[in-house]
Amino acid sequence: MRIAVVGGGASGIMAAYSAAENGAEVTLFERNEKLGKKVYISGKGRCNVTNDSDPAVHMSNVVRNGRFLFSAYKALSPKELIACIESAGTPLKTERGDRVFPVSDKSSDILSALRRLLSYYPLEIKLNERVLSLEKKGDVFFLRTEKEGYTFDKVILCTGGFTYQATGSTGDGYSFARAFGHSVTELCPALVGLRGDIPVELAGLTLKNVTLSARKGENVIAEEFGEMLFTHSGISGPIVLTMSSKVNRIPLSELSFAIDLKPAITKETLNDRLLREFQAAPNKALKNILPELMPRSLISFYLEKAKVAADIPAHSVTKEDRLRLVSVMKALPVSVLGFEAFNGAIVTSGGVSVTEIDPKDMQSKLVPGLYFAGELLDVDALTGGFNLQIAFSTGYLAGMRAAKS
Image (tube, rainbow, N blue to C red; front, side):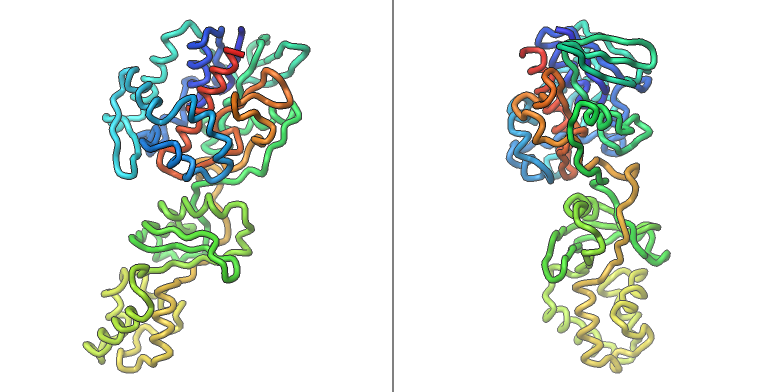
């Protein structure tokens, strides 16, 4: 059984390993000079390789088409992936939120383990060889690269999404899929910052323990608690990245975004707090009282939204002013104009439609012998090691089934 694996990222490496483990004659094609370029830069160079939690927890963190992954996780669970990598010589550790990293904090050690797994079998790795075309005639796949042509019995496409294009994820796999009649759902950046009209003085400001909400009319579409930051072009940080994955299918013109600066305090309690602060320093300017409640660099932006003068003494703040101060502190509006570009996104949302792929083996329902795995699929998850686990699990299942069937 001759199998071609196109793409040498997380899913491609695991697909090649699994297929070879099950007796196939495997050739792995990678357009770059080395395998796993995106793995190398993941987790800011530390590589959050998976999440040490039950598959049910993983599924709850999948934004799109989580049910499609049941068989893949059964083939290679998070704990089995951890054992596999550690057996290849790279010890792992579990940090906050069950996130798994190499003990060394070096993604290169994850890649060393993956290369070691590949070395167990006599598979062929072709680096610096981009696949240009792929077609099927009869039962044979004809694959042409920049260097020569090849024939295979089966092909597993693991070319990645459309993010971090410098690593080689330029959308080739979508073109191959479409050429075989597959549908590709709309591609959107996910786990990405949001562009907005933000005053330059806010750039670099981090807010902790706040809640960011997105509303469509009166309905809350998504709400995230934690840390965020203002950038030169908008907002980013953990809760913003999560938010982006949950709202990237809704026109942003239909949404409004707001920050609750004091999510643990009710409006009534906050109103009482302001009254006490004003009574304790009646002649003090409002802008000099507010540092007790928020970062100093945020005050001008906040007061502009509340429509209250910064220099007004506390004793001159009217009840209406105070209620606006409370209201805006609980829902500070933020203008969001769009998503940051694909190259700034962690993963791609959208991809080859999973309705056209058999979840039991990752094989195309349209073209026998053609398999898909990894970010190329219309499946994406939140941060925490879930996306890499999806890549490893789908790749492992595809390789195993392609070799056995």
